[in-house]
Length: 121
Image 1: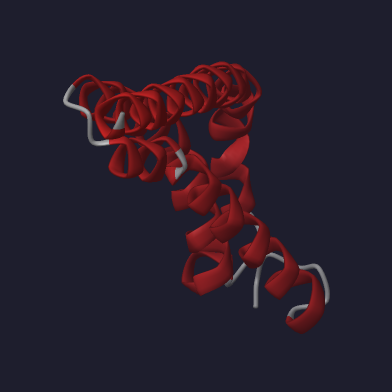
Image 2: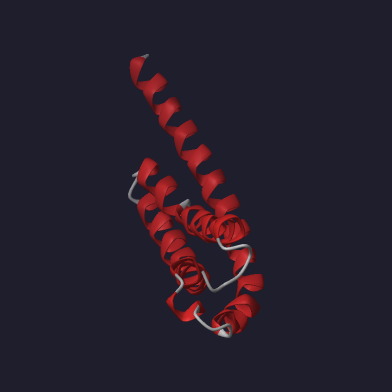
């Protein structure tokens, strides 16, 4: 009786992780497409004098450029970990793009609050 309960729990855990990975793969994969034009235009953030030394501007550009790479690595690694039955690590790696998005948002908020919305801070 105990084996069937643990097996049922493992199957439920596996199915929940699978659903999360599918949803995360689709959402973050789709978000790569609008990030590509932003990456191409990110060099223009350095047009204003002094913006090349601005840490929030550099952080924003790095987060934009790193997003497709982090998304690809995170999703591929998450599926590999899922196949190896390491469900918690799979969820963590699938959620890595959220961290990159939060860093970009934090850089934008910092520039809006402390730099008056300018890229040169």
